[in-house]
Image 1 (cartoon, rainbow, N blue to C red):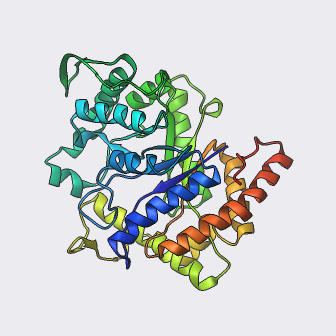
Image 2 (cartoon, rainbow, N blue to C red):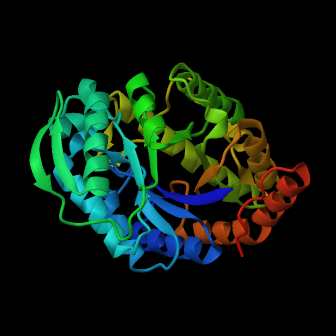
Length: 355
């Protein structure tokens, strides 16, 4: 079992300096705790995420850490020049001394695509071609590609990976063509249901598993990554604030998906979505609460779904950095021992120890 830290870097009721400083402190703590990887989101133009460049953030924290892997979750591939992003991935691997990992995605927010002058309807086709270009560039050190969207001359990729290997790659997009490529390169599906409960996550797993089966592969024999909100507290008021932050993130993403966000400067107005869960449903449905509750929910999802890579989104919107760090510390000292014990007793592969 591998545990990761996901950094959305949203800004709500806190200063931008606290967002950036708190993110770096969170990753340093995750490194000390023995987490496997730190992920950085990519979004633009709004407080939903103050990280327009996950590769830049990964490079910054690589110099502040020792062992934790770093990477984008995900690169919004259609917004990039493929040659430039391939070079920057290799540069990140050099700067981190071989700790780079890669997350590939096609994007979904209409707001962002329109601002970049990109065609949202082409996002999956462009992602797949860019992914193939990056694969060739970082593993063969050359660009030579002819596709429907990109045509590249035979040019050398000057920067090599820090050490020869297959770059650990995760992906978010479930078209048959993308699934086939993912199977061929042994990439890891990276799934999130936001404020959804375990049943929603299992339904998404089943959908991806069906695509794998159609392509002639069994997802049960492969790695599967899931991202979940995680927050540890015994205080009911703090728990409710965490749920409100989770709800705000879900509202922002939902509105931006269809271009219906209302902006106050760069701040997205906190407006309800049709069919959104209640705060009580969020509190009952995601791994937040006391150490015992968080551990029980994580173990339940690992057992029922077959998660091998558990990515923790540990800083709900509107929560001060110091509170998020305190929750992380309790996760390491109180939750992980319970998870390890439960998985060991059940015969499931023990979670990686976090000191």
